[in-house]
Amino acid sequence: MKTLKRFLIYGIIGLVLEVIYTGLASLLKGDLSMPGFTFLVMLPIYGLSVFLEPLHTHLRPIFPWWIRGLAYLATIWMIEYSSGVILAGVLGNCPWHYSDKLNIDGYITLRMAPEWFLAGLGFEVLHDFIDELPFNI
Image 1 (cartoon, rainbow, N blue to C red):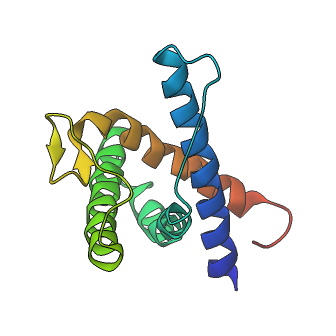
Image 2 (image 1 turned 180 degrees about the horizontal axis):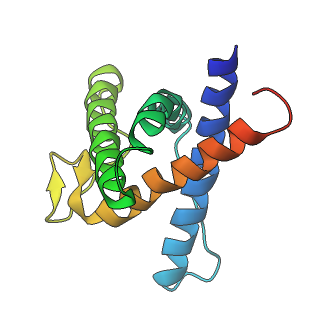
């Protein structure tokens, strides 16, 4: 039950952050209404972050922040790429498609490295926060 609860927490937080991120990106493009969006299919993909908790627990005491960030980045890209391939196979189309020069098969883009690097390190903070709550999640 603990894993399911955390799966849902990470999934919902991921959806919210994606809407905020895309809304801010719209603002930077000049759209003052800041429309943000996501895909509901992203909930379980973001929820998979629960399975990164053991990686966090193992890496944090051993490696400096920048090595951990690179490890999280690589892991996130593996999840994003494989999720894209699976969704394209199941749905006939992947909900996202990167088209910039740094994309790999449209499923991931190297352009997003800073964001995913920071997201992985932010996950450490969120994981610690959830672990320190006065009730069990």
